[in-house]
Image (cartoon, rainbow, N blue to C red):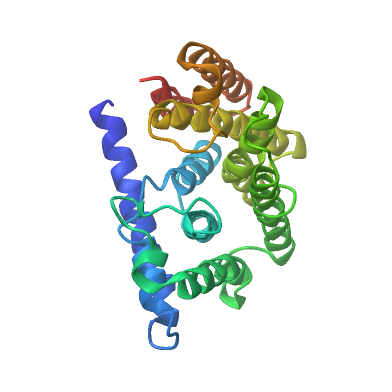
Length: 282
């Protein structure tokens, strides 16, 4: 990764972590779940979804301001909740996450489940705060909540998780895996790019293009993750495990090229986003 891009990403991670700490301070003295929630969020992973949200907003507006921070944090809360629930014994039964024991291993399955629930609902609480209305117009807040709930709920992430749970592991075809990836992973990436379009009131067609670019990148990202985890992954819902590395690399390039092609046609400078996307091939 180029030094300039590395510095950009580190700067955004610091900004996101600072804001997350500030928003969590609201519940620090009032919730018994604070310790488990804080454990799950910090230290964080790549913070890629909120970084993409901020980079998209910056591409449109030329700079990042306070209006973009709240939805960036909200989308990271959603992502972290999904990881906590995914790791539970009833789901993927994972023992480690982000280089440390998973939340349920430290706090128990019941507290992990509730911590995920808390993060999910707190994301929407942040987007609907009264003081947010001074920054984000109410009708824009409603559109943001709608887009995020669409991507994280029954039309997106939850649908992908449920569809995966219903599969017979010895009968997985390409369409099934891509459907799961499109919903479970890619929908939230789509929202990461679309929400800045809503915030900045660009034309609906542009917001839809941003969402499509984000979803295509999300599928490519998940396939890249499948390639990395191919040898150790227990699940059959792994593109590389089922179809091999060569075909997986071809599919990754296809979706990544599709996403970049969409970005290049947008009426503002998307070079930073393209740079972040392109790093997936390295």
